Structures are given as C-alpha cells and as structure tokens.
Length: 151
Image 1: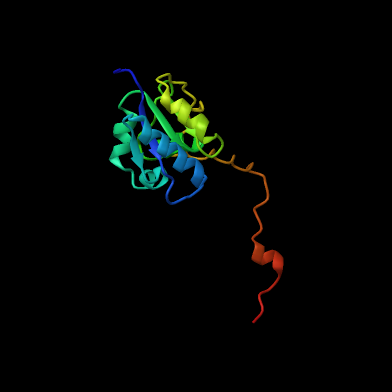
Image 2: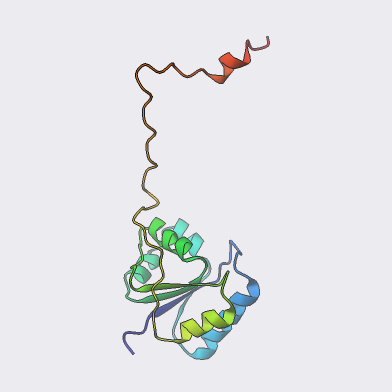
C-alpha cells in the first residue's frame, strides 16, 4: 500500500511529559503490528538541533505522528525549518489520548489531518508597539521615582 502514511513515534525521552505507560503501550503495539515506523528519542531535542531527519519526514508524504499536542508538534517542525504539510499530517496526542486510541489510529491507513491552522511562524517578529504621540511626556525612569540613591 504505497499511499499508507508513514508513522513517527516520539518517546519523549527528555521532556518526559507523556505518561510512561501510554508510551510503552503504544510502542509495544507498533512493534507487534509488524508495521514499519520511525522511532525517535525526543522531537523537542531534534528540533533544537534542527535535525535533518525532520526535513525528510516533513517532505516524505503523508505522516502520522504519535507524540503530544498537535500545535506543539507543528511548531517543533517549523522551528527546525521543516514545516509539516497541513493536509497530510495527523498528530496523535499521547498526553491526552489513551494508548488504545492512539494505537487504533496508527493501525488504520486512514489519515485524519489535524494540524492547527495559522500562518504565523516561530520566527515572526512580535507586533511593534505604536510610537507615543510627539506631545507625550517622556517616560520617567524607576531610579528617578525612587529618590536619590543611598551613598
């Protein structure tokens, strides 16, 4: 089945935010299924290093990711310069879903894309504060309000 989504499993080794029993059950289910999958120690760490494997995963076609929150996974890939395709990525949240639910979703070839929408990127600068009007009084520094400094 050439159109089957690739599966990525994150063990969340360093952040340890996914319940251990859920991670273990999902990994056991994947191993017993005889389905090919990629397992990584920690997507957060890979993103911080801008691991090139994330780019290969992001551009490799349909992808199901067993990790944590979809919004977090989206921005981890974006921060690594490997944006995920909105219409061909499904993220299964091992923090909030049961191991049985995640395993069942991974076992099916059906893909239910669920990345949050939005076009801001982590590199987007914050909105600039408007300049004060020309006739506004100058800001007073904290030291001048507090009085003279002790000598």
